[in-house]
Image (cartoon, rainbow, N blue to C red):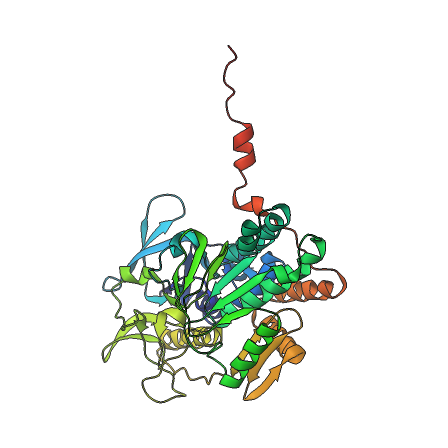
Length: 442
């Protein structure tokens, strides 16, 4: 029997876990697994706030693909087109000409990107919070703003530098806001020119609550805790403009802010526009509970999808509901999908994915959190411990688990690192300036 070729498009939560499981369940005589992704690592996104705040090393929040997927073939590049009628994908490597890769089964898992709105100034002023690069940039930027504020005698410049605006009250926005404020407050001990009251942290949320994944009382508790830390929480409010750093809100308020972080939701990767797979009204790939792509009532043979980019029916709820775009569902869907692909290759029937969302955990800074798991609600230190324990158990590889635990252990005895490494974002600037040709002397 010739081995089947399985092409995995994207190495995020779904792609990495699916490829890893497929490589373990299927022998080389049964299948060849090829993974295509432009990045050499998978980012464990729940750890981005902690990496940005300096609680763990940035490298420990990512998983090296080649180390984990040793039994898979890695292609460093981007899938630019999928023609499933031909069962061929066009791949653009990071260097060199594009080439076609034929396959028998394809796992479509490019994930999601930030969902933005046509708000004036957002493209020029905003920063997202989905990648490790964005998280470290935000950390360096916040610390740089403290330096600017401490150095300037201009009160308007200082006020703008110390105003930090976060748009979106989901998990990404709340955790990023809370961890960044916690880090900045720690850093102020080294800035005698500044007081904690000088900083202004603003959360803008278009709905009337935060953390929609948990009950309203838990969302209300979260708001109360942030308000106690003198944060400015604007619910039922929209960002209308941020041209030149001037934030204008739908409630009529206006102020200058050097930092505008956009965490207001995600949308499926635009890469899906270059495929011939069926999509729903939210541009997600339509799927059966078995994670097979479906076009109406017809199964698209050899095509599979899961995670943020897929519309997967949630069998634990009423018909018409779909699984939420969470890491919890993505990891479990990846495992079920890999098992189903193995079943199909061996001539058996796939099994439906069914998993009840067990709850959610969120960090609100060091030793602070909120959690709702199996109906049990926790706040403060116990919720923070639950948050760390759960995500430590979820990050792939024993190597990364150990490194994260070591980082946390050292943090109990050593003070948090609050140095900005802004030169990382433009490392050649100093050399370019120093190596400019010198004009001949007359």
